[in-house]
Length: 314
Image 1 (cartoon, rainbow, N blue to C red):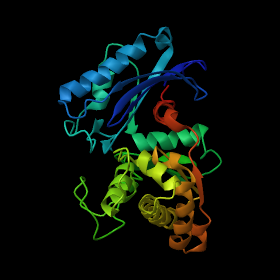
Image 2 (image 1 turned 135 degrees about the vertical axis):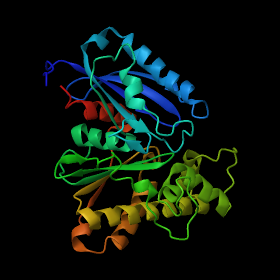
Image 3 (image 1 turned 45 degrees about the vertical axis):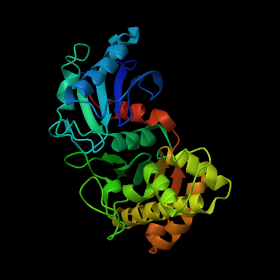
Image 4 (image 1 turned 180 degrees about the vertical axis):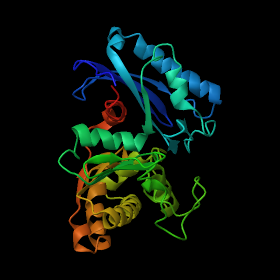
């Protein structure tokens, strides 16, 4: 392999159900430049591919692009890193779409190594490189937002699994009689703990926001004001998360669990009941010692993580 100079840059794509972001990241993990376009999630496969190409065009217009030596992609999943394909649950027009090849064929990328990973795995790589997971060898990192994603660091190394989907915690069953999930199963963690689920739980219980805003952010505002339905919705989400984290801690003996994403921005509205429920579910002493921490990198984690996936490519 050819070795990059120490000052070389990494290109990064963070692809989700609402936005496609692109960035330039240096060798220390600092995000130097960011661009973003909306995701045409209900459009055609070609329109989606065109939006990714447009983000790459914007990145390539920056004069620093010439220093890029590899490109990382963190995509909503499931992904298949062996095949280089993605099938995002919330982007129905893409099923087994060859995203890695599509990016590699872009004129500005041609000849550069391109590395694909799931968005939650990218976030995990970012937090272990530059964030809250840095001190730990065995860590679960979660993104709790519109959906729930997760990734694992085992023995100090990112553990992706053969297809890149290891740690897909949002789609494990935590309620055997629970709601049907778009993934085809039922009672999935995502259906109970995501921002969408929190808003649905509060509304179904009787919460009626005075402004008509039924987002998870509005539920958080109501919870801070003491609304019992809103508080119960966050408690329900925290309980589901605690069950999933405790099961993972029991299975792989974690040092820590790092929780990020939009829902985690609610702070102690989420973390106080999360710690309480985790103490109940993590009954074995080795699992109970798992530390629960907020993520540190915020909205930059997706791009820094995509770059982290690519940084071993020389």
